[in-house]
Length: 116
Image 1 (cartoon, rainbow, N blue to C red):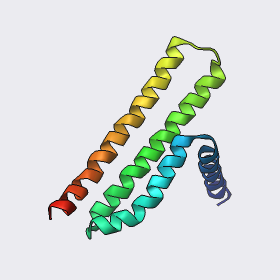
Image 2 (image 1 turned 135 degrees about the vertical axis):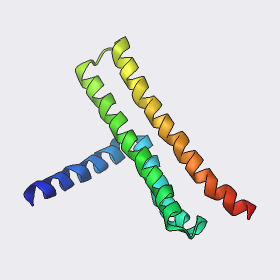
Image 3 (image 1 turned 90 degrees about the vertical axis):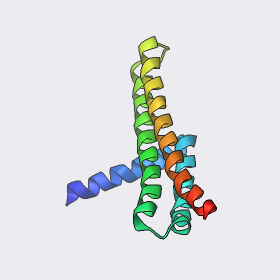
Image 4 (image 1 turned 180 degrees about the vertical axis):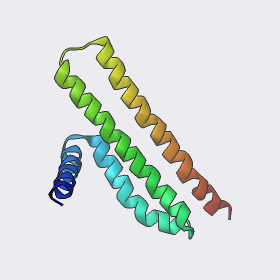
């Protein structure tokens, strides 16, 4: 039980640190907070609500992973290095992919709602 509590506290500390230090994390947390009631407004279907909220959780998770990569890269190689730059670019591209996915998922019920 102590290991589970310790893991929970570590995760909470990660959320807190990310929200304090990363603007993108703050923006995505705000989007998630707004998305929860919005999901209930957009669709009566539980699976659609889960998809709408879940895709934003995926965006947030990838953002945290990208932040972790960037933090580690900056620690290991504070000076500019082309390979470190590539690693950071890959992380950024992963975030972009999830943002596009989130946009597509959110557009479907919005279009459905407006058309009908």
